[in-house]
Image (tube, rainbow, N blue to C red; front, side, top):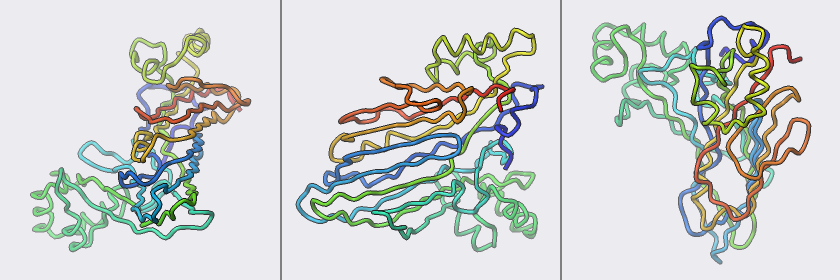
Length: 312
């Protein structure tokens, strides 16, 4: 899939030439009063998301809990695959994620549903040999091969529009049953390639974009850098990228997260980065860190990267 971050050297003709990102997050445990998250170590860049959790079952008895990784939903009436960043061209694992439990790969089950509103239409698609992976060309090709009566039925069910374009939303969840022994910590490591949205010219400081600075808590030094780059008359010479991470599922544990550490890596010293967070410190040429103790996330994380066109 094309990602506009690869076209940073081009001078933009249209500031609306953009690719949307798909928000993902970490692992989700069934809400319970048994498992504590002692620590979460989260690393985010445009190339990788890595999370290391340390869980403790403090109940005095072994507990078996379902652990899930919900993939971002794909599809729907306004979905166009060329407008969305899909990092891995795969039917069920578009983020290429892997998971280890105490250093060993975990065997997961995968559940996929083709949703039209609140109705699961997976059975119809499977019975008619249409792949559920709405983002792949195979789904369009299978729809085109349907006989006229089946296409009419698909339209009545809300699966395709008048032109035969798919309308369903693919909902994918990986999950497994994990036993947490009483009193013994369990370490789960999880990594994937993020969906990175972007546009070839930033709207920061421009009349047609008044929301970005507020959404990403952009401070004055960054605004001034972008303004200086626009003095040549062609607009700001920075491209935008965005990565979203769902943090609020960190509230499913018995207690707040004991020790939370976030590292954001902007990738290159010349890249600018901004996100909303308190107590952020610069720890290296490209890295920023935020630490929290006994913390319950109350909002998700959105990160803005600004890369100059003349960057190496």
